[in-house]
Image (cartoon, rainbow over all chains, first blue to last red; front, side, top):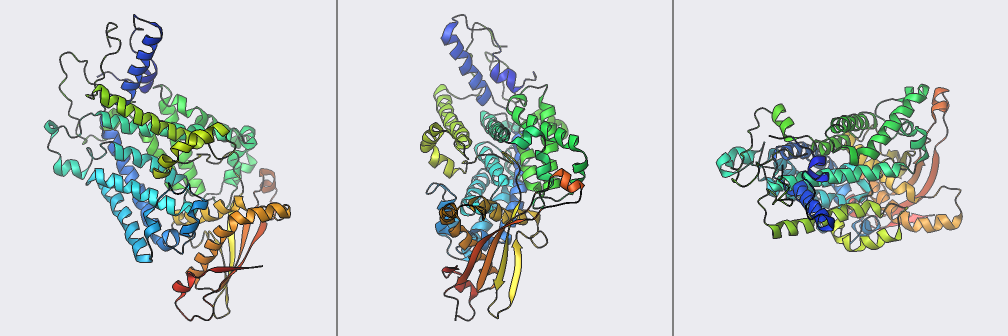
Length: 342
Length: 216
């Protein structure tokens, strides 16, 4: 099987320019690159890994919401329902919690989201669980905008991909209980899996691009001192990094490396040569944020999003019990199916 | 390798051309929404992005996609907390902060409460801001602060609460190395009392729903 990456798939035509040339040939190249990027069938195994990890974080988030559900979602909580428009774009940011008129209703609705998150993690009734999980997250975030942060943004992005794609076709109770074997095609490479993974990948690039370019406004990022601003903030701090005060060049190096990584991510995550470096840096940055700034859930969610860039072959090597996908029988006139994505 | 004689080879997706066209259209709309959201805010943002944003608002709202993604940008700033003093029905007082690193556990619960202070703080001008600026800003932050006051009164069963926004001093490396630090900036948010709870024994949850009266 030929290993490819997204750059060769999407950005570089893999054939000679059309004999017709000109604008039509150029447009045809674009059309083909677009179709290959989005619709080439791929193994849903990476999506299953993302599903399990996302489900675990979401389950934990739902449990924490429930610890103080009245304050977050109740009619007498941190933010009165009638004031949600002050922080949201109403009426578009609807929430089922707006209809909850008491503590019991609030807990039932928060409980539904928790059950959906557990089912998503287990991969049971996965398509329904993914959609309900997404609705639950959106409703929670829209009702409690005073209490949301990057974790919720990232979980939302991941859940959209999981709801769109066949995220329960591998590593799931659905597959174990109702799999039906390779002959029935469950877990086989599909365009849906590709669309779902691409949605996560592209969205992640957009996140990093705007986060990185937004930092270019800040003098502390150019001066290489921004990391100090995060390390010295006692409200965030969970690990004392004030020793960095004696090592300003270390602060500079960490700050500038973070800035370069984030600004360049959207371009350099795609080539095969630079991808491992950027994934490793993502793990370092997000684990660092999690450990030192007390935002482990956010850090883990971002790492999970980065897992969408890990090829299926890597997961098959790491998870030897993961049954290989059932490959469709190629038509005689078709090139062999490619199951590696990104 | 796709033969050059067939430069636009049919994709191996098994999807018909109309389905691919339809899916492509949906994807383009979705991606446009994903991009226009951070392009249109937070400020500075162009007028053009605001115009383009308008038809995408339902999509962004429904899927919770309206984010700016400016994590720790443009510069990591100081942290904030809300300091409160509650007067209980028996006249005793209770003091605390939101968030409270000692009591708000697990850490995710702390962070969700921390966001209350972090999201209200940018709306509150410093005490030395011109009176006109402070008056205009108060229209925005007062309803949010009333919600915070009501929730804390309900949680602790109090009758009256005084709130302050505390901006914690962010020391520079030199200051830390020399063992120096600066003072926090404190911005009064007001004193609030539960109007309907006065004279109502018990039933704090019911009373918590009563309108709050801001005291000068």
